[in-house]
Image 1 (tube, one colour):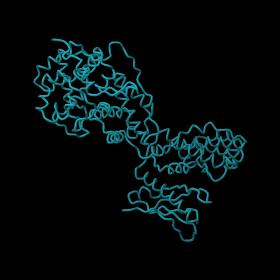
Image 2 (cartoon, one colour):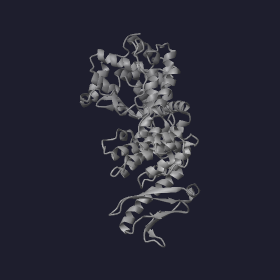
Image 3 (tube, one colour):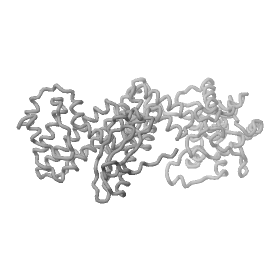
Image 4 (tube, helix red, strand yellow):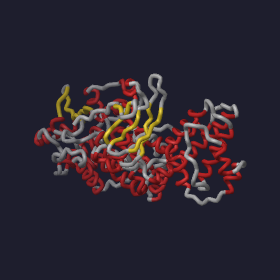
Length: 558
């Protein structure tokens, strides 16, 4: 069904053109009786004006013009605002953060100042204005008058309520009224105005907090206008206290789970990354409680407290910084980039890291590599038979090697190579630079690795085909885990030597001892270039094959 934008019409007994729009059936009950405020823009010679209407079967109001061209502009603006309000009613009440509430109240500050700063009246006008504001805020007067932005506050009204000495007069009144009731009477329409300007519906708790911020912003504006009335137009320092309002970030509440799902569908992370981050999100949700249902309510203090809870659990600084905080920062940065948040509450939060002696990762020794390769030669399991040799002979990451397919073992320029790429059935690599072509070590060819490849065929060499579903862990992950278990069971238990990754450290060290340049070793191992200049160096298969062949395998006789 195609929905048409309402066209300006006329009504009986009026020559003004009218806006008329039917309330959608799905929100008719929610909308009925609600007040809608609409800002009609200036056009031609017509000044801007704010109009109101009560929602029923229709929302209808005067466009305050007889000019069809002006009516067309105003009708389009009204249609946008009314549909924003429909969307807010449809999505339900939102809960806003403190920053967002202060940002919204800034709209009230600017409205009041801009309305009166040209002709602010007398200081007494604004003393009266502030007196009523304080009486409402402190619950001292229920019948506080509605603030009318169309005219200057009347000192006589305040004198009648509090006497000539306004401050002492307000102080003598007892606090017998619920402040929320008095603030609704005083600033309810301004609160509605700023919410509807941004197409928002909020829950009662948020509305109460916003009313308090609106009162404070209006009172700040009153102080500025009182100075203006005395002839002082110097900049008001309080004008800068209001953060900008990012409309897209304060609409429908987005839960932490919703954010994670949106990020996952767009980023399409590896299944292992998705699994790890999912666990981190669960831990953060446990800490946040109900705030996890609306990411806009998360504060930097919440993230710091979560970090402290992780420290108390005994998690390492690396785990907290790289995994917990790393995933939280990335998710919340995604929210900022997509206008779901105005800023990232996790930014700058970090655990102090002290690099202690005796904790850094170490390479295998030559003797250990030789022992592991000798054990591999005795294995009937093909993964344990060939993976240690591939790791030692290329310095590649185990996750890259276990994803090899037979179709990616090829002969290039007279050298047998392996093409490292994401597995064809949904695998993934660490980053873009991980894709590369690496020559096989001559010792592998001599040991019969090519015969094994021919037997396995064109498909996966070390695992059965994976499901290919992004939400499932790739089948190759289990192979690398089992290899690490086998290495540890064989007696290689030094905690500073990661079972598979220590081969990578060893290869870099062995390459250096054999005179292989760091940049060439980086290209073989898929390490990111250390500088911009290094990115301009490119190595062909012949260069890499010579460097790999220079590293003896096994390194020592067993």
